[in-house]
Image 1: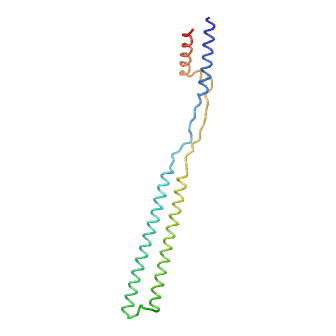
Image 2: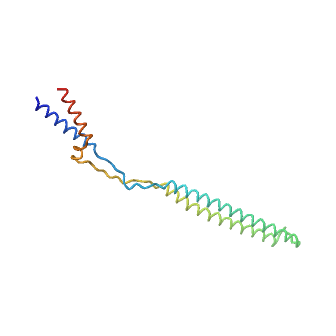
Image 3: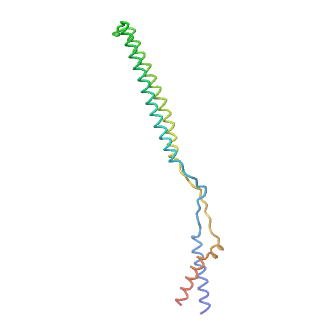
Amino acid sequence: MCSLGVASLLLATASAAAANNQSSGSIKATGAVANTAPIDAYAARQKADHARAEGDRKINQERRKYLQSEGRTQSTFAANGVSLASGSAIDLLVNNRAIAKEQMSDIRYESDMTAWEYDMSRTKAESRSLIPTQDYSRESWSDTLTNPVFVIGTAQKAISLFGRE
């Protein structure tokens, strides 16, 4: 009867060791670095918004400069008795207006291209993700058999088996 109890104890110990060793692996994340993608995306969005706002400011500045020039030209023509109804005086005003519109379009294009570059930076930053490298290690049998938690748990199972006999 005693040999049966010792055999049961050894069988319980071996089965508990096998069961515990099955799940005794651990996954460790290594190479993890801070993910700055959200901050980079936010900064790029702010730069794009700033580029667009700066473009609007320069366009408004160009518009004011043109309107002031047009007002000076008209007042100069009026002071010299030049009719603005037709002829070269009107052509001059129309040409100046076309040049001003072209300059404003160039400013808009440049600011949109700068903003587009920042938008692309933002998109790239948002698409980056942190994929940590994983290292899987499995504890050896000797680590399992010397683990105090394993030894105590196995002893408790063995004692409960002896109590039933």
